[in-house]
Image (cartoon, rainbow, N blue to C red; front, top):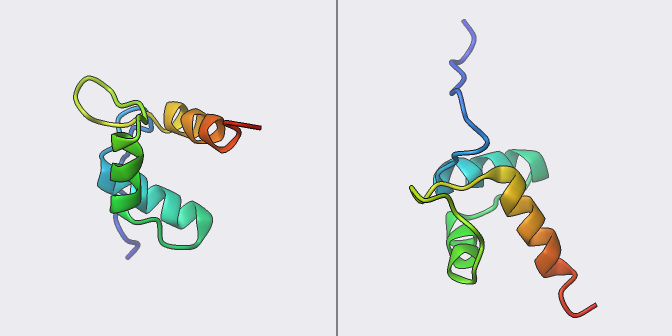
Length: 68
C-alpha cells in the first residue's frame, strides 16, 4: 500500500511545509529556522502567516542579487 500524500497548496504553505518541500527539492535539509530567519529579514508572508512558494522564491532570488 502506498504512503498517503498530503495535499499542499503552494500559495499557502506553513514554515514546516515549506521546509519539507525545499528539503525534498534540494535533497538536503532546509531547516525551519532558516525560513523563520528569512521571514524576520523581510521575506513576504500572506496575511494569515503562510508563505507563497513563488513569492518566497522570487524574494530569495532578489536577496541573492542584492548589491550586484
